[in-house]
Image 1 (cartoon, one colour):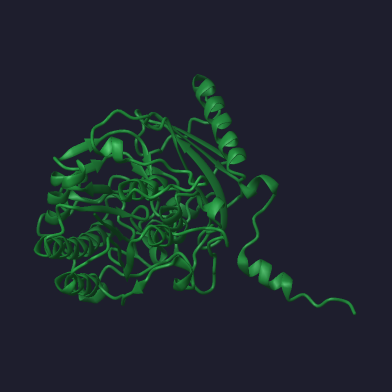
Image 2 (cartoon, helix red, strand yellow):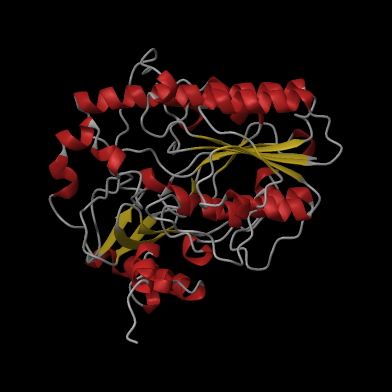
Length: 426
């Protein structure tokens, strides 16, 4: 059997199959109807590189070493002992291919792909994969990782136009202003472009006669690039789409899984499907049983973290079905908005919403009563037992996973490079 993993940048769950009524995503909606949709899927971090590194290793960002962005100027990287999906599957006899971007390391050779193809727009990536599948006659099992840039900002990447053909519905965590309508229409256009690329990929797989015996997983790194989403541990920042289809493997039929799942779980799922061993240090658990509708042991909580994005802003969170608990370890703006979001109209028009104050040390939300996480209940006597329980869970998780925050502030790669350049007395 073959394996394909498709990711988008900055998508969250902004798809028709997750209830986004104005965005046009017919290909991914159809894919969800043919497979399984995880409606409570969360990433481990609301930043690109940390989340993608967790997806690729099955390990939390503070465990695999990628606690910030991997590209020039930041240069976080996987720890020396970390093994990427491509390396693990390659060791099990898979021929591994990367199409499109990767945002885990500054050295792509570090990841272990046998073949690295070009990057570009979603159309470029879809065309390259279609051409590959058209000429491929695999005698060995394939693992294809396909990473689309869209819908990362700028939303007009590749000349894409805004899409308001089905109207514009501003996500409820944003102010419903003219600026938000403008930006949401642009986001919808970028998502439609990504959906068209996924449709072409799936059609090429079908034409090659490989669809029946291929596990295809579609997901994203984190939430949309909007204020109070990307770079935050609120649900719009960590909620992710996760879809899977594998007809011959029992992952089919339009099933919906309501249990909490983490993007740590994707790697062990791929490995189990391939019959490959799962390394002992992997912190996720396979989702195959849940995807097949079989009995399993669902998570009672997921954990998420941010250490660095634009700047040092360490925070950790635990989320259950009913509550969210966030501990902020430094005094920073109420909401971090990365540079591309700061350049956009919503942020500029609503600046006071995001930078007029600092975030509190502790945040507690009742997600049933307050799904937008607007009313912090930390210190509320009625929720004292909940707060105490979640606080204990969070500290225990940090201890169990050797979180470096427990030892003090986490230095960045630039800090370590600067310190290494310090002259020594002769």
